[in-house]
Image 1 (cartoon, helix red, strand yellow):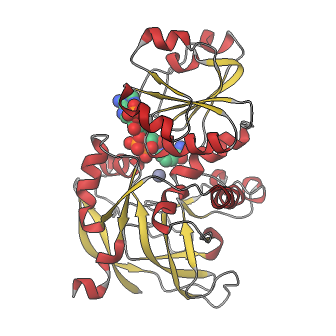
Image 2: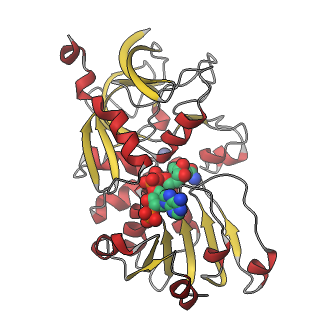
Image 3: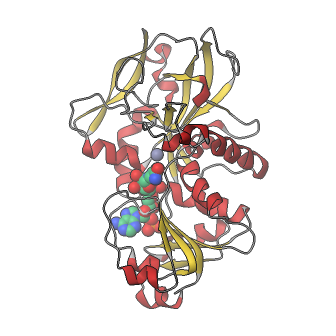
Length: 348
Ligand code: NAP
Ligand code: ZN
């Protein structure tokens, strides 16, 4: 086994612990994790953590390959790479064959809290100095993109990229993004770069200047019923990235005829009034993560358009502060942990 250091849940806080990564299988890469984004899903996971299996969060990271297995063909030691929230899938089902590994019929192996398909162990995430991954699930880091600000593209980015692309967003589309956080600010950047007329929906006007800076045309205040009413039937696509349970009705009312509300934020039971769909033949959809081809496409698009996340970079020792601040919505717009403080020299 390969010893490393990482941040593991102990109740509701993360503590620095020694971890072991598996020895490389023939198709594996060992990666020195340099930067890992802090996703709201990490908070949900910590909140739901029962302590029965180890929890090391982190599922959007970039780093450098340090060793390769005997059958690796696409990478060599020294290559910069990026890994998202899926690290394996069956590879044989219709979804995997279609490049939608995120919908693998046997369920994809998640980067943390998943079950390794070979040894049955619980996967441990990127809040750690090393990760071992099948090469197929690592992406070359595009040249020219800042590695720290690129890390969030691998979860927050791809989660909003897939629905935007599959809903055909492009020039002339009218898109609204509800919730201006990690996912939301990347959804705005993507929609704008795809040519859509883009609106932010936020709980207050506090982020109006930021929304404009991201290229949004305007900001709707979701708590202002009158303002929301004026925007009825206005958008072809509404991407809902809100992290808390909420009523979908006000957002469905904003969708234009034959348009779609894609609910990718809070994932849980929702109640829908059928009439809100019936009037205007509206669609309610969701999405999660992305397949390997879509992830590669997103990274190429970001390289071409110079898109990365707006980040606050923190030493990994401040991970608990980052989680507390994320809980309080005190982030613009993604925390990224610098894992250099976990190297053996730094801790000697
Ligand atoms: P985030 O950075 O915390 O952003 C969430 C945003 O939601 C906040 O900035 C806030 O926007 C809004 N919000 C928060 N609490 C709210 C409330 N009570 N009512 C209304 N709006 C509220 O979180 P994130 O990392 O972007 O993640 C967003 C959600 O997506 C999380 O639930 C996460 O678990 C989920 N997620 C899903 C997938 C997937 O595969 N589908 C992948 C990653 C994350 P305003 O301040 O603008 O109102
Ligand atoms: Zn995530």
